[in-house]
Length: 236
Image 1 (cartoon, rainbow, N blue to C red):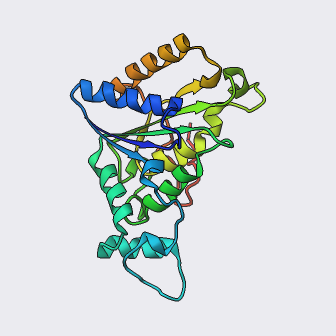
Image 2 (cartoon, rainbow, N blue to C red):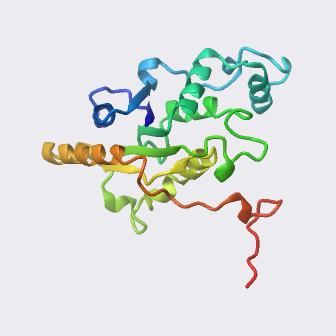
Image 3 (spheres, one colour):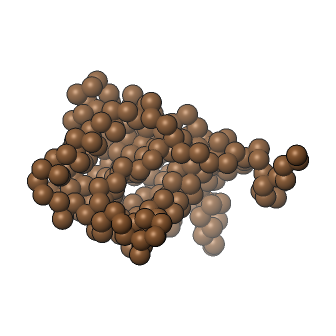
């Protein structure tokens, strides 16, 4: 199995850093191949504009999707973007490793998605969801939160975590064809003692070693929708 980890935390000594090191050690120890994009260490630029491209379709008006399509057709992605796209096509499984910030991805990771998930290359022309370009690959969010589990329940103050992560799991990963796994979440690691932190890392080790076999989340299929992308009415 070839696993691509996109790591988005600025502090190597953080629990997110520990999770990525644990994943790499577990996977490589089991004979799998691993590539890591440590976005902060790479000084990855999250700003999406003409710097994404070496080609120019329209010099007078920047329409990102048009430029992405043109770059797809003319091998016109900037080297940093081309490298990340190549890693996505290389992998069998993708892990997004991040702290939950303001109910979403850290800006550097969202910028990675904005720049790398390019029209024409990773989606478009009816190639989305279960017909997506990256179909056959698996993806999982691995993350930490600042608050404890009750806050992220259906009755909790923050609401259910599955709803908070829906734009990522459904709108980014499933949209491009990935089969999406349940996220691995460590709640409030800063509040845990050393023994519990070690236990959580052990559980994470088990999860990454089961990437190939674990059941995935269920999302609607394209065929269940009509030409307006509205769910078809089922006849009794």
